[in-house]
Amino acid sequence: MIKKAVRAIRSRMLQPSLSAVADVYSSVQRCLVLEGKNAAQLIRTLNTINHLSDAEFRVYSQWGEDGILEWLIQRIPISSDCFIEFGVENYREANTRFLLINRNWKGLIMDASSEFMRTVRQDEVYWRYDLRAVSAFVDRENINSLIAKNGIAGNIGVLSIDVDGNDYWIWEAIEVVNPDIVVCEYNGVFGDLHPITIPYAADFYRTRAHSSNLYFGASIGALSLLADRKGYELVGTNRAGINAFFVRRDLLPAISSCIASKSPFPSCVRESLDENGRLTFASGLERLELIADMPVVRLDTQKTVKLRELVPLYSRGWLEMMHVRTA
Image 1 (spheres, rainbow, N blue to C red):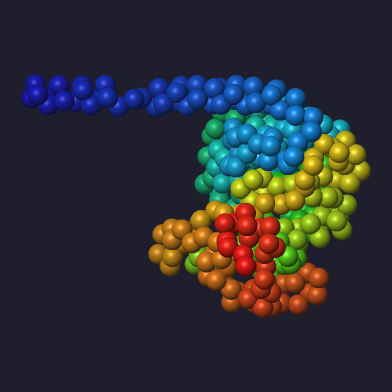
Image 2 (cartoon, rainbow, N blue to C red):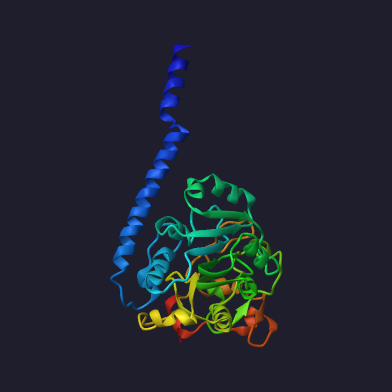
């Protein structure tokens, strides 16, 4: 009995209480934000840069978007300290969380998972800041009503789109807000030579559409074409070749001469899956071959074709950055 009691006491001593874990988590968050503030001060000195990726740093973003947004906001006359971001999962890793905490912005976030949104509402960030978390499967039919129902209209500072699917079609449909900056994920596997996107399907789900997880979204050319129609211009991408940044044309004079190259980067991310959902680490042109028979819409002709019918998809520069040998 005594031995059992001792073991029980030791077990309780070794298992941290929930409050202790919460304290550690809060301390880590404070350190992250402090480092982010320091990084934000450092990039104030970057009056001219070769590429947007020169300003990258990560606090809560996945690939360095925190730094890029901070650099842009420091220089553009932002019209509103309000943001919208959808496709955020539990919001622990997102493009707007640092804006919320560091600049005390307010915003609306949305995700299809009600469990993720419930997690956000239980996070202290939810009561500390003016944040609204809504569970919704966003599509082009409901996006405007979802935004309007949550009290947002007109000018906003940042719109961030990452739904792993209908990104192009949803951005095309948005009319109720007028963002200063748009961040949108693009599919680097679709290349840089053609304006293409997946055909619209309201219930599109990336992994169900193709087991490789590589068939989704739109090419950088498709998003650039749409941006031009909406009055925006591409100002660059992150170095990982995941997210593109667009600035409304009337705000461009503030930064147009500050960025030497606005060319997009290709993606070298090896996120392909097998039929059992395990990573296969396909790289380079192997990724394209996995989805070559999938349909895409050519936005310049409005025709639906198979990806392989558009080969080559990549410019020589992209191939070189993807470490693919060129003749």
